[in-house]
Length: 422
Image (cartoon, rainbow, N blue to C red; front, side):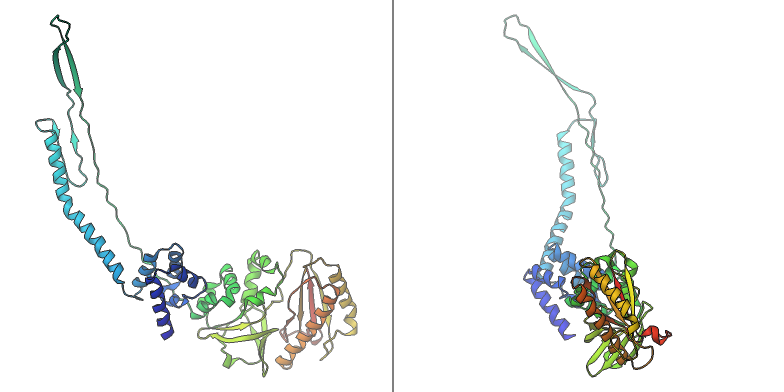
């Protein structure tokens, strides 16, 4: 809490110094996220808009309205001068109207047809439909005594003035509270790719109201390890994007102290294998490299690899799929599967550059989860090595170890590596 107060004091100092560019940079990098729980997402975005447009008064108004800061002296003085000036004009308005009416009356003095009406919404009308003729006679100078007559006709002008009334209505916006875990994901620069994808998939509401949850959050570097076109392809397929993202979310709050080895079902419907050992914590093939980044209704752990659900497909061309099988406890394909592996290697050799390749390892459906996870990872890594040797130019995703994530399958079909090319 003290750190938030310090950050607020720093914000006020920058505002008083007129350094909106510094504040704008902080906003864009998440440096003002401590205001999110108080302002809510709607006003927080309004804060960003005010900073982008250089509206210093708008920033002050938001903070003052939420009771975060007191009204600065310069703004109070400015408001006082504005109100004083407005009051002065209001006080002079009757006098102005009176003088205008007097001037109009004097200008038309003696004209019985003149009518003057004053007041809010009134119409001031001068009617003089009869022309006034003035005749001037003068000697024309030719000595015959004749004169010339000149007639001038003046017509009255009718002027109508209408009063206009403007009504301003106040609008009150109530912003829902945002879970601090979402604030962490949205503002930590390490997770900007994940935050953007969550927003694009429309999952913010799900994450904010669906607790308790645990989010295994891939870093930007983890997403960067995917094939170049993978994220673009996902962006064009809303269902696959949601499937990928919800595969990183477990429907329980699992802080680091309560993590144990085992299988957990994700919001995607598929399971992930968690392995806890002296070396650390892993989820499928990914390592937890930052535990308890947020705790509470939603728990966030950082991971170094994107988790890939079994149904995910990258690429837009024709896909080729292969399954290579293994004997118990062995990490190289069995003799019966050598022909299938040779076919996969030939397909890799013939594939065009940057064709995506997904390799996923499975282990027995029984036994120790940590051992199964390690075994399935080694099998996937070995198969991936054979494919890389055949064509290193393909867009290989990191090998994905599933461990015993297929309960109910027979042992022979569980000990395998699936290969998808294309």
